[in-house]
Length: 139
Image 1: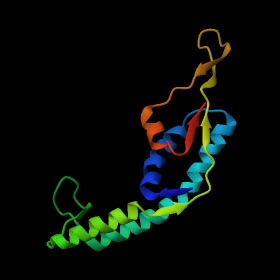
Image 2: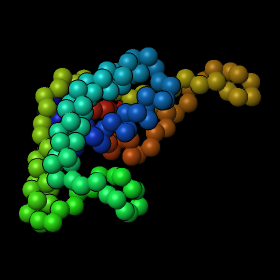
Image 3: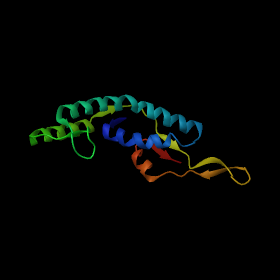
Image 4: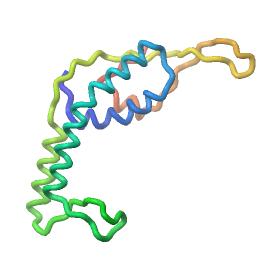
């Protein structure tokens, strides 16, 4: 599957949330594998992004975050070059072998009152589903 850098960036935050959820072993393993497959492309993205920031950015002496790197140039053409190169970076595609993760509709749970084992509906925020749309199915 071809995956763009912007899709990876959107998915990583959602994956990190799912990595904290108790799920069946198979689903948990698939989520962990997907997170590990995003590791190398994400590191490459960060290196190139940091290079762009060093090329076009300056260190802020004032402002809301002193010492933070900001993209500020005297030449508007440089700012446009940064924007163009950053957009190109965001749209770069990486070929990854990814199996679709099937999220369960129900997960095992224990009743707080009587400690009886039961299945409960698996609830997940829509923001996670949107970010992982290409990589998951529900059912």
